[in-house]
Length: 289
Image (tube, rainbow, N blue to C red; front, side, top):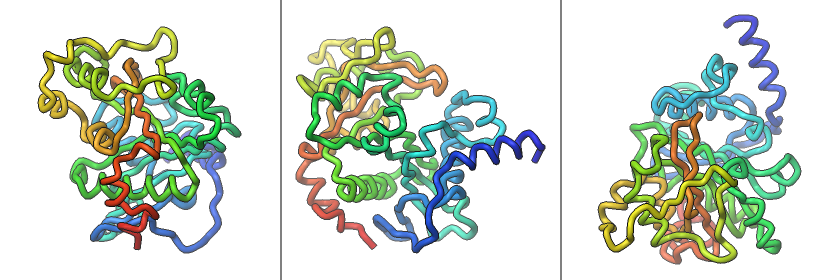
């Protein structure tokens, strides 16, 4: 490792939060897969390395030079977010080898203390939060899973972790950007138009894109769209959100650095399908250790 990289690494590690040494607390387990919040710099950096592997090596994202050099996807938000990890305990090796999925969680109180939400760069989520002064919000972001683990069990466990974390922090609404691959929104016209017509957030839950960045998702008449075709054209994460009862933005935003077409997902906890509340447990105990 070069002196320059050593210097960068030291500077980045200094910005990460310190965690007390304590027994790791599981939020859930299914077979050999476990979900919990990352503890300490080493585990956070391992999550960032996983994000790099998926976003850069697999999907072709373009990150700042220091991130590319270190082969870790990071930004200043990482320092005050919690990082949900899915760990395969059946893999021999260190924690860096066992992490197969991750989610970045940012509660409203932390966002207020540190300059806002990540999604505000694309959508006016500040206006959404201001319209609901009695609710506590949480942002979900940087979701990624290794290819061999992109299945129902891993997604289910990630949501077990999100659900347990939301209950612990008294969260009443969640939101976050979800992505279609590629920077041409019209390539996803069927799926985007279906979302605009069937799941768009209305009234005080509506969220507009930042001025000048939004592209209307209403590209085709809803009558011309077959639901099955629209759903099959969506990434699994977005379909999972819809099953939970989520709403979406009516505008998409292109992220040129990540090479994606983003939409905003809005999920009030009170609107989560009763089927899924029962499945995960009203106390998040369904898959607890």
